[in-house]
Length: 216
Image (cartoon, rainbow, N blue to C red; front, side):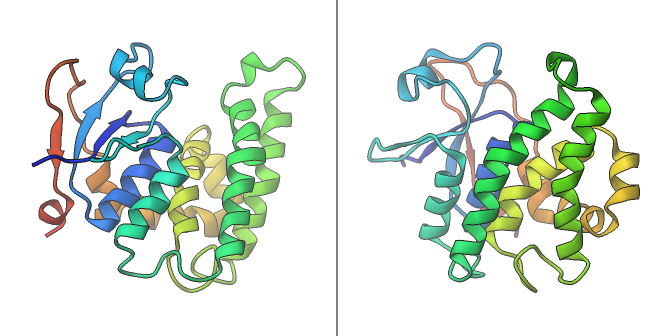
């Protein structure tokens, strides 16, 4: 049986969000774990930018943007209706996350590379956006209302990465966001997609992942 092939890196937030969507949708695929410092030729041939995730479908179509992988997966099976309403609102959150928030996160996490500001400057800047999320979650269970939607899973890996730069600061300043994050981090869905895989070797088969069996 031919499966879609996913090139992934366990800790990459973009790859995490893709795996979350594939797991949620119960899509069986071939997992190829790579090292970003040693990208395989097969990955570069499919997507010259060399980033993960890259999903190659069985018809040869290549999807190399994480949010597009998520939306493709939900198009196959969106059993809990993550992406059928509040579409514009969800997309707005995701666009800000992938643009402005990711930029501030990089400056905060890798502050030694950015000489135009200090660690405190970058922490304050990223905190301004986190505070808007915390305020939302003070009044609702999720980012777009009272049910889980695509936006929660799309933002979770980035907020998680940000939180772990200084977890004490994060927990102290954003209690509602912290609670939201911890509930997702300890969920069966999240734990299932953070399984460790051996690094894939070129010219070999990857690991077939069957989410239906892992979550049963």
